Image (tube, rainbow, N blue to C red; front, side, top):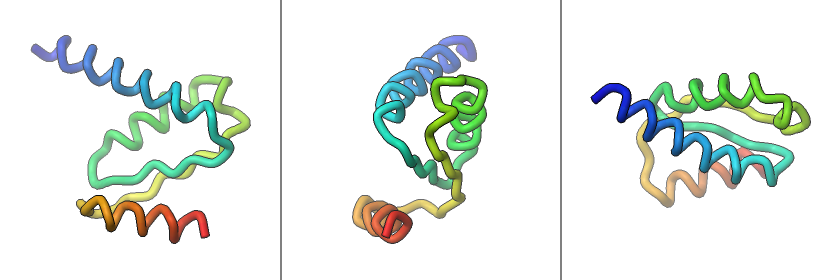
Length: 75
């Protein structure tokens, strides 16, 4: 069971990394530790050396709150 969860999480992170490579500045946020795990994964890959990545803890948010949070961060 644990191996299946790890495989699914790894596949999910791989999808995210494909999207992140397109940007110069990235904000990872949320209430869980997944953002920190993804950040550590990205920092070990030299493909992301030129991308500014920041991690911020946040509470659980609605979709509208997330949009406002991101708009405020990048403003």
